[in-house]
Length: 236
Image (tube, rainbow, N blue to C red; front, top):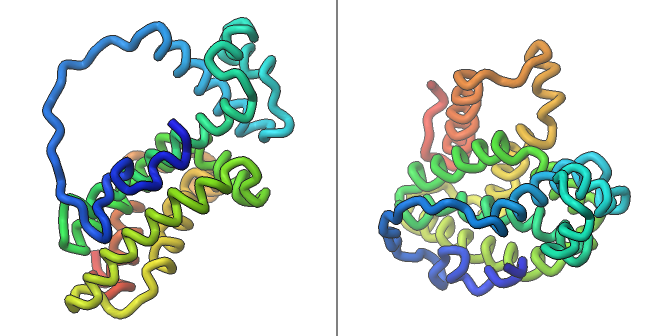
C-alpha cells in the first residue's frame, strides 16, 4: 500500500469531518500465513534491523539479504528497490500509529479516547522500537523519502482528529488548547520510550522497564496529559 493511500480518511478509519462510526469487524478464523507473507515478514524484519543500524544511505540490499537468510535475488523479487523496501518498513509503523487513534472512533469521551490513544502509542513504542527510530531519523533528515506522507496522510489525520478535539472544547469537555500541540506532546512522550530506549534503560539501572514499571509509566503519562487538558486529576 502506498503511504498516501490512507489520506482519503476511509483508509484511516476517519469519517469527515470529525468522527467516524465504529463498525465492528466479524471474527474470522486465523489463517496460516502464505509463503509470500512469511518471506515478506522475514525481509521486513531484517530490513528494519539494518536500516535502524546503518540508516538509509548505509544500508544495502546485500546486508538485508544476509539478515533475512535469503538470496539477494529474493529480496529484489519482493522489493525491487531499496527505497521501496525502506518505505514498506516505515509504512508499518506509520499505519500502526494512525490505527492507534481508533479510540477516537470508539468513544466520544475525551478521557477514554485520549487514554486509549496514549496507551496504544506507548505499547507500540515497546513493540516496534526500531521502526520508531527509523522514522525519527527520517524526520531529522528532512523526510527525503516520506515527505509525501507528511503532506497528505499525516496532515489529513491531524486535521480530522483536531476537529474532534475542538468539538470537545466547544462542549466544555476540555479546556481551550491547540489540538496540534496536544498531539505533538503525545507523540514526543510516547515515542521517547522507543527512540531513547537505551537512555531509559541506563537510568533504570541498566535494564529495560519491567512490565509493571511500564504500566505505571503509561498511567502516569495518561494522567499527566489528561490533567493538562483539564479532565484529569493530579493524583494516582
